[in-house]
Length: 236
Image (cartoon, rainbow, N blue to C red; front, side):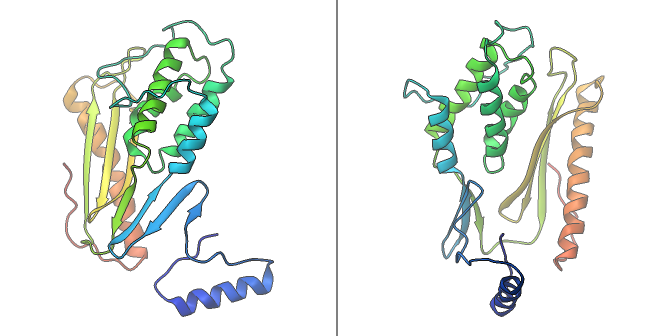
């Protein structure tokens, strides 16, 4: 359990009440939680999953030490029929599942993980080779982390994009977005659109609608926290 707030006395009160009702031990300031590492400095705090990546690479048992610069090659379009079926798909499913959780702090693998997760029911040798590329990318970028500065503006700003008819099987587009709260990245997603777009303009509008819904929810959430967001949110 994580207890956070800006009132140390009230936090101590809550911890005391919890100890009265449950057998609990305080572990001090947050350092590690469910595979996520948290480090704090005078400038802000950062989160990463470096140990989680190390454990993931050990489970994958990569026999080489190669690294790559990008998690997926440019303009790759994978199909269910590419390559030969894996004799044992269990390893592929476990690794992809771990990568889905890793994307909690590593948005740079969000797109390839979304693509690879579509083939967990019947993965092939081609899909597995692209999975190994993601792991080699993580090996070379294992120290990357998200940083949240202590001093930052309390305004939202978001970015969206889409790839028109990107899926070679059903020709649906992919939407993607990320949202910043001041200088902190707080939300991101890659998602296949629900219908086939008839033009690149239409698929961009789908992507904008997706991020608009997210921003609307974030503005309500900030209002519940007592944070006033009075200016419009730029969408780029």
